[in-house]
Length: 351
Picture 1: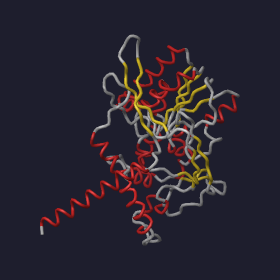
Picture 2: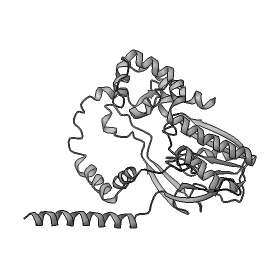
Picture 3: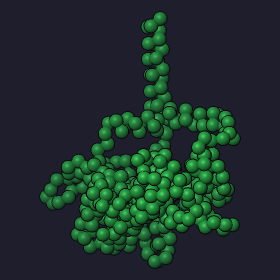
Picture 4: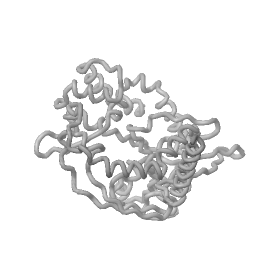
């Protein structure tokens, strides 16, 4: 009997692995990471950079629905904008560009804000900037990017385009998480546990089960009450109040990431590790005679919270932030400190 149970478990594991491998082989990846070599000095040792891009020469049609994540959790979620049909065109290098020239006046580097998340091909800000200035602009933005990727992709592709100006967009929301680099490399080595975690998370088997659960189990009691929903009664945030209002939703962690004093942030690993990469970018641009511009993209709560300050209860704000962070001061004190600290990260970068 025990042998049969063990054999059954072993068979299930083998079948699951086979499905996982088959799914990985047949699924077209959204992003590709590959290693490139770059010689820092001549003569000198080569460093191994990892660049991230989409499958080259790809084209996507996407329908975007304007609704917050976990929309059911919001007691009074308003109707969003109508669904929009978007196009996303990828060039031979794997980046979002409709043109192909040997030289560009401006190269832009960043994450999804630069690539153009949830907008069509003619709407990313690098495209609009090119039209505004009547300049050729090449977009090296890629969703999920971070400062070390910005440096790597600029060295691998940006320098060959001989730009006069390089614009690096830094996103406040997640560009200061921290980067641990091995000596002699600008690409962090991902721990084995993290690689296993991501392999499981994005496994076709796991994603298949997740989709099935959402589709078939999600509707059960979907109209029922949600415990503690009053914490979200002020979300999505209404700006301005009244008939012309627009609505903005964000997760608690987006808010708590702004709860730094300037001194705390300046000493944090997230800032010090990113600052090292920013200095490397500056050194390259100085050496190549490229004008460097850092464009700062504040997170959604950084922009929205000051506009809705008088309409947000300290108690609800405290309860919302406490979903992600413990040990906060009392509600009124927390609200005051939060608003005092909203610009800490931006101020440190400006220095």
